[in-house]
Image 1 (cartoon, chains in turn blue, yellow, green, orange):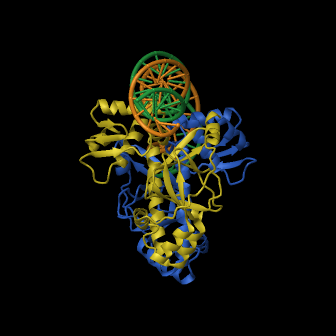
Image 2 (tube, rainbow over the protein chains, first blue to last red):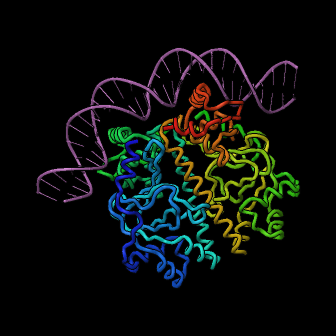
Image 3 (cartoon, rainbow over the protein chains, first blue to last red):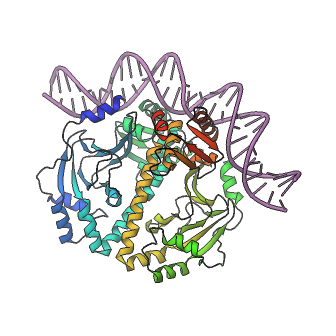
Length: 249
Length: 249
DNA sequence: GGGAGTAATTGATCTAACTCAAAGATTTTC
DNA sequence: GAAAATCTTTGAGTTAGATCAATTACTCCC
């Protein structure tokens, strides 16, 4: 019960408060334009959508929305980092995803019925997001078949990636779950090894992988001791991914 | 390694062999028409799509496709039941989903790039599926914006439901995972209790929930002993879902 | 309907991972 | 930049769930 209270009372700031700063910096716009959900939009439509959207600034640990709240908006991350999580009846906080700049989230709610957020979303550090009205995007999709095609591709990809997440979680032992998670973080084709940055604090990666922080720490210490990873804060160097995969039987 | 061999050698029958029986029975057509991916199609387009599709009959335990095979088709279940699973490097077989008549599967591969099946699909009993060419469906989507809208709704829903599956798997203890799984199987709004049919043999439900069959059996026996469920083969009667949720802290 | 194969249950052990606790390290805040 | 808060690590003890083993119950064939 302790954690429920924490989560429900810690965030006394009102949620969903916009800053009155237009979204017009070239970097941000460029990032938005390169997202599959927006890349096909013509200049006019994109402009129109942005006008109907609001820019939100979030402080460290600030809540953006709550699970079960009506979902009238979806979001694009301009800067910072967020995480999605759920609270179960006993108040245990379960991390489901982390979201980086350039990503969208809650966009699947566009077609949910009734549209309610399936989880909590909070900023992991100070962040800025673009809050896009579901209705506005939906209307635009209907106006142009090409837009719908792009959205389809995006949604299909999202479904595949969730399927893959599920696959990791059907792995029974904690070490192998962690190893698969790390392998997935490695850039594509980095068979010769590479560096990985944990997208969440270690204790939240643990929660994402359905294990305790202590277990996470011990497994990582063990991998380190066996020369399989080198650890520097939240940066991990994986010299031989193939060997890592092999030991995860 | 044992299980890999089993899975790879057990199915000596060639995969993806069609029966030359047209898909024209009224029941089957009706089921297809009521699926969101096809309900918007006009008679002519639906007919055209069916003509390009093939009807496949699968025997008990017969493999439909293998993980990593090029995905040129997706499938609609006419009768029977199938399951999706993956094999990891040590040959452990991990069940990811079960599919009932009226459902589609591998439909997310329509937009995957490259299009490869993400898992194995096998019949759990003798089944019939409609094998639909990805290309044919894709072409049709492009021809009519209304179709794309329907597909979008479907894909978004699928993504939400995978997200929810993932949520169950972040629950750390086996009993609570099983309880949540059962609650999800209950028809919507059956707060007063109801009957649930396990969509998979118990040993495969166990695999889906990342636990051993023995653990599954013991947990169920325990719930039974506490009067929380009554078990009759693969049918479970849940008299008080609320109480079940409460004990799953 | 009887036999082969598979699935489910139950018991006995063993171990991976959880829990509790306490000390360091890191990060955030004022 | 010091204090507060949070995160991480490590140790010791406990337990949930895995593993091994053996019996019983189904299911699907011929």
